[in-house]
Amino acid sequence: ETGVTQSPTHLIKTRGQQVTLRCSSQSGHNTVSWYQQALGQGPQFIFQYYREEENGRGNFPPRFSGLQFPNYSSELNVNALELDDSALYLCASSTQETQYFGPGTRLLVL
Amino acid sequence: QKEVEQDPGPLSVPEGAIVSLNCTYSNSAFQYFMWYRQYSRKGPELLMYTYSSGNKEDGRFTAQVDKSSKYISLFIRDSQPSDSATYLCAMSALTGANSKLTFGKGITLSVRP
Image (cartoon, rainbow over all chains, first blue to last red):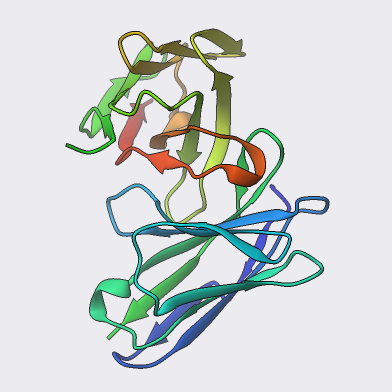
């Protein structure tokens, strides 16, 4: 176990709705990253937060937004959901060397 | 061309076989190389982490990096049915608070008893 937890585990939404996913980082890790993993693909980097500030963003539209809190937990918000947003959303917290992933939230958009 | 290309699968081997998994990359800025294992419907689990070129061994697993050829490999000796999973290579130019991992597509390995 990595110590990174995510909630909820599964979620079903309809197109156009908004969703908030949550992540609790491993103790002592002040950097959190979010990734989207479509079926049969590798994870794609969405963005990273370091000490509550966005610290890099991948090729995702502004309707993907996030927050990091003083306790280093984090949220991923997605507005105006599209069918292609159906995926496994992964949160990872970082040491100085690399990233450790949580179990993910599986989102299905109908 | 994708930044990271991973050998397509799936791959099926008998128990006890030596498995070789490979990735190539195009971004010469990558310095940190990782292999993750992902079981079905789970998050990726870090298997191996290496910096720059060279070999690193951990039990039955050996990671190899050749930066001159932009090629990385993971070898699994004495493969077991419990090794059946998807293997993802990942790499980054920086580490820690500035790391952004770029992944390969993943290869699904099945080890037959």
